[in-house]
Image (cartoon, rainbow, N blue to C red; front, side):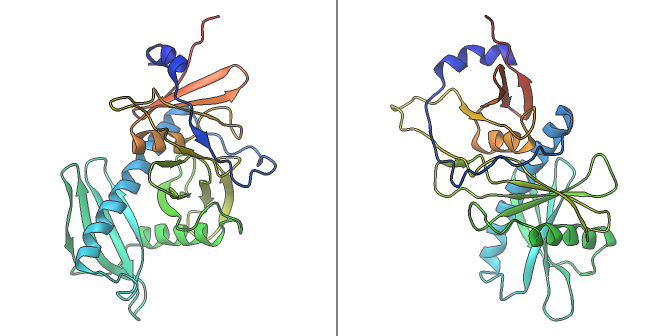
Length: 265
């Protein structure tokens, strides 16, 4: 895969970057092996896309989600079908409000479960999400963060991501994403990792009709390899990311995979 993109480095489009509020680099983040990063990036993409599609379907039926008591959602995904469960509180405590299944064919219909009780795992997942939300840093890149939740591959707890939204059409939010390591009961923050050193946003260039960039190039300094959000963004925006992690190391991220680029000298 790396050799296939090697010549593409010579033709990378120059893109405008806006590293808003870049400060001192954050400390090194928790490191995972490449297979785990790839799996997590694909899972982030599926959860984010499923939640977006399910929310659109639900809003068509329930236009005012706040008035309906909706507090958020969790996603249960087996790789083929993602069930997005919207949780609500209408005065009787947290319960299942609406379910929407998302497949490759689309989302819907909206189902109101006959049993609105939540399992222990569902309550714990949502508690982990709330714990992460409560521990966002005070100075954020933008408002309106999205969330994703997975079991920690190296422990009994949870990983929660809070993902910075795009500020405008065509703007790719490379920076501003956070990963939280949360305890098994969902109540304790064990670690917060900033997955970038700034609020970097890349704006796609204006190209001639029919032309497209070979990929996007970014520098990454908080870990020795690309991270799961690079995989997520590459899938979401449907183009490779070339990630520089050191003076002589470049990686290509595309189609859910991370691979080093071998540069001939």
